[in-house]
Length: 222
Image 1: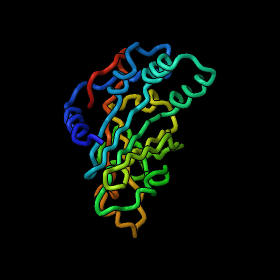
Image 2: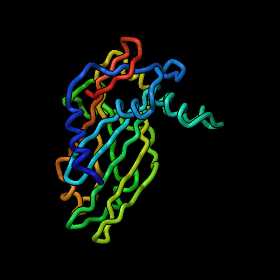
Image 3: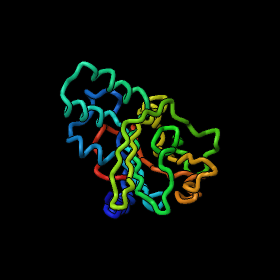
Image 4: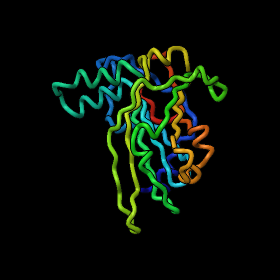
């Protein structure tokens, strides 16, 4: 896994810009643009610990529209689109580089190995009671990449859903934060290898958003 390349990209994404425009949850109203461009604009990256990268893509209606156009019309398109339009949805991809001394990755290769929290325009001082937890977390795939030592790197992809549309959730808010935490058994040495700070506080991925103006595709991040 090209962690150094991803780290460079993450550094570039720290540059500030105006809020991204959220499209109402109707694909017909979405602006037209290549799906790769839209996905890049709605994706954030974090490096919470050595050898670990977290990517999170927020599903705006523009991305749903682009995905439908790219795939071509299918019988199950309406049901698939509704899942990503009627709730606030993320695709979260976590890359786990093989670590030495080795630890058991298995607890992190399933949705139960992760905790997700959503925070709307509250910043770092949000009370625990104000944090929104997911309504559903679906495992999309687990990839394993062999290493020269005979071990494996891993990539885990999950779909994370919170109740309420993104458009309604943003409203007058100007920031949305997704917190991603590993859930490691207390006796697992891997918890120390991953980093106690990450296990305790999680890593935060942030989007600056607005519904105030006509939709447009942003080209940068927060």
